[in-house]
Image (cartoon, rainbow, N blue to C red; front, side):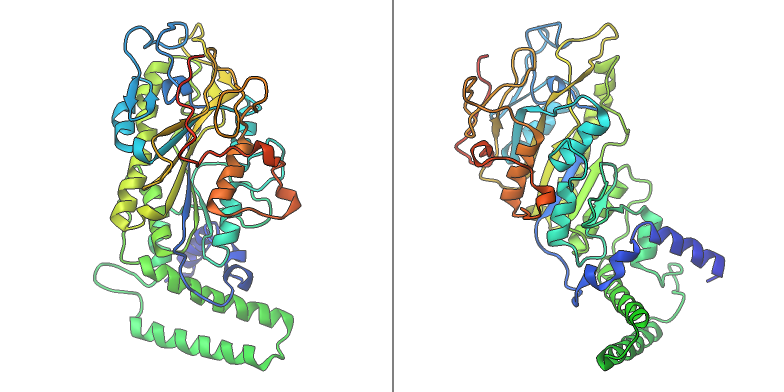
Length: 424
């Protein structure tokens, strides 16, 4: 390989696997693959209108264009707006879905809302759920936390790796591949060189008299060897060329191979759901992009045999205003919805919480009972506290304390707690 081409590939890979990912702290002493839960967040970029998705209003024409024209869809216990691909999507997945309506983002600013729903707090400096989960479950892996198109600022625990494109992925998984008819070098020769190198480095380590810099380089070479072994497990899979969901496929391959534990995916357009004008026509395109992405994740996970490992959340930075503006769109609104999904949950086919007649936040008991006097408004921190408890990635680090008192811990995952759609 020419030196220029090698440096080009090396610089590309360095943006995917940062240097710290090849150190002993990231690997420990084993190349065992990860087989636990995969935390997947699908970000509906731009501020998803809850009235066009899972919190429909079908009688007031000032709120929705479909009001008085088409009734809301009903899939099991879950209602959805009669728009785009909603009915087919919810008919397919309602059994494995928990809808939470009336979540107050505490902001209607894109960046702040994205951070609040990624970390659980509006404050800066908190770790995302993706980072905390990866730090606990995937820190020893080559790519603990994969981020395609969502909030990826690290709090210093584990850095996010960009989901590689098809070319980079193939180079990572098959570095010796030259063409369909040959490799750059004979596989047996590479194996012998690799074995001899590892043996020599292990012998150097066993001596215990290396200088700090020499020891660091030796550790990095050994960790890189372990990383290559994990990536080789997926070398037989080739991402579909030019597929709309190629990066989702690559991320799921990484999950199947056991080289990642946390994945963030986003809809194609950065602010695709920011429907300030012509919302209906915009959403007739954007909603199918979202639902098709989620369906693709589940279909591909089933094909790869990892569907039972996935915990998936659909989130957006906030909701949209209750009334249609002069441009036939809706503006930013702090109150919105979120969705949890698993393959066969005990807690599926349920709706927890609700918003008011004008999409305002309401107060509920921790069991989801409407309680204007003694209840609490649901915020992103409550969503994240429940996720941490359910998936077991709570942290004792005071820097990331969500500050949710025991009396405010909503019992979202209790199958007996079902708010439904109260007559408000």
